[in-house]
Structures are given as C-alpha cells and as structure tokens.
Amino acid sequence: MITTVTLNPCIDKSVTIEGFTYGGMNRIIDSRIDPSGKGINVAIAYSQLGGQALCTGINYRVNGDLVEQRLDKAGIGHDFVTVNGEVRINHKVYDRSTQVVTELNESGHMVDEDALVRLKDKLMVHCRASDTLVLSGSVPRGVPTTIYRELLREMSALPIKTVLDAEGELFLHGLEGKPYIIKPNLFELETTLDIKVTSHQDIVNAAKVFLDKGVKIVGVSLGSQGAIIMDEHHGYYAPALKVDVKGTTGAGDSIIAGFCLAMKEGLNLKDMLRYGVAAATASITREGTLMCTREDFQKILPQVKVETLL
Ligand SMILES: Nc1ncnc2c1ncn2[C@@H]1O[C@H](COP(=O)(O)OP(=O)(O)OP(=O)(O)O)[C@@H](O)[C@H]1O
Ligand SMILES: [Mg+2]
Image (tube, rainbow, N blue to C red; front, side, top):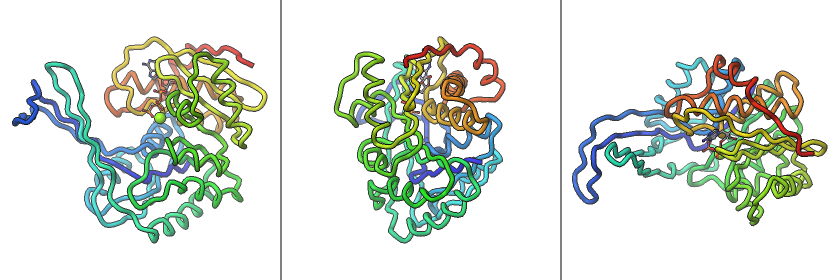
C-alpha cells in the first residue's frame, strides 16, 4: 500500500463564461467542482492503476466532506487530521470565446502546531503498514517549509520508500530529509539548483547533484518532452508520446503513481520510467482532473520507448 500526504487540499471550482468583462458582471454558463490536491491525485491514479492507497494530511471542517466523498467514491481509505476553517477554493474561469483560463487560487487556511503533531502520530501508524510514502504539494499558512524534512526524518527508521514532489523552500529543505525518490519538473530543477539546462547532459549533471545529497532516484519530468530517470548507476530518457492532450492537470501526480506501481512490482529503473510515462500519458488523454485508467495504461505501456543515457 502507498500512503500519500496532502497538507493543502483544495476544491477546484471551474466556471465557464462567454466573453470575460474585466470589472463587470460575468454570467456563469457552466460550473463544476473537483475536490483535489496532489497527494489525493497520486492516490486516485495509483488506485485506478490497480494499487491500494491511503490518503492522510490536513482536512477542514467546512467542505472537508467533499474531499472525503471523492475518496470514498474512488474506494480509497482516508484518515486526515481535521481542523477548523474551510477547504481553499481554486477558481478556474474558462472564457469560451477566447479559450483562455484565468486562475484565482486561495492559499489555504491557517494550521496550528497541534494539528501537525497529530498528523505525525497518524503518519507513523500508516507508514508502518505501507511500502511507500508520497509527500507532495504546497502547504497552508502555519505549516513551516521544513515540514517535509521533518516528516522524512521521523519516518527514516521505517522500512518505507519515500517520494518527494514539492517546490521552492519545501523542496530544498525536504531534500535534507533524504527522500528515496524526487520528481522535479524542469522548472523546479532549474530554480532549485539555480541553473539553466539546455541538454539531456545538463539534466544528468543536475540529477547527480541530488544523488550526491543522498537521494536514490531522480525522475525529471519534461512535460511535452517526456521524462528522464536516474540513479547512481543508470540513466534513461523516454520521449513523450504524441497523443490527443485533453488536460495536463495531474500529469506529474500520475508519473509518480506509475513509479510507485513499478516499485511495488519490483521492476528496474528503466521499467519505472516506462510505467511513469505510460501513467502520465494515460492521464492527459482524459479531461480535466480525471486520472489514468488501468486499461489505457496497459495499452500505452508498450508504446513508451526508452533511450539509455548512461
Ligand atoms: N503535452 C504533453 N504531451 C505528452 N506528454 C505529456 C505532456 N505533458 C505532460 N506529459 C507527460 O506527463 C509527464 C509529467 O508532466 P509534467 O512534466 O508537465 O509534470 P509536472 O510539471 O510535475 O505537472 P503537475 O502540474 O501535475 O505538477 C511528462 O513527463 C510526460 O510524460
Ligand atoms: Mg509537478
């Protein structure tokens, strides 16, 4: 089983309008809500691929039930620390006439120290029953940027593989907790190391910096360019597949779900990359936040070609 941590769940509220009027009244012609969060997406993708996942993290008294209902519907177990406040809303305004999306994202309600202490206790229990722990996404106010480092250190005595996918300070501090796998995208790789990459060799060199810090596997996702995976001994590149892209939300979460599935099956690094790219590709061919299906994943898997980098 994998356990995923979502510290900053959200509700994506997507509304469609026809011709945006700045400063005026805009009539909504269609709307939908999708409870979400990176850890939640990884769990859904993993479970749809056939694995078993559990979601923990922080949830809120107001609208937290929407998040839990989504997981219930997907048959995924959950055990959040529930705090006062409401789940933040990310508004996505789609203007049908220009096909432009404008996003207005809330940052997440305050969380106090006590909730984090309770979370650490919960996590310890679930990690004892899991083979992989996924830490991903942003954090609400009140949560220090050292949180992933703290959680990684607390779990370091357990025989569990850890995955870290975060940005900025969260990622930088998280690295000090020596996660087993990291999955930066190109932007995260460049900003973390303060470099500009122009070739696969540059990415290989950058990945080595993380490996030297104690990370065991570095997966770098390159959006429409595919992905690279590296450990101490090997490096592989998989070009992206040319598919009809319907929604890239959750692409990064799906590649992680694919990596986790490959690990569960005891596969090697090369197959991990194939699994990750196949899962991500299967997700982007579905609309909005819909994640990969097992059927699409299996169909796509033989099409993923892998080149050896080292
Ligand atoms: N336009 C695309 N065409 C084909 N494959 C894609 C495309 N976008 C993403 N992918 C696939 O999805 C994987 C992950 O995408 P990406 O690098 O965009 O992740 P990310 O930036 O972490 O995304 P997220 O916003 O979910 O955090 C890529 O490695 C690639 O295999
Ligand atoms: Mg990402």
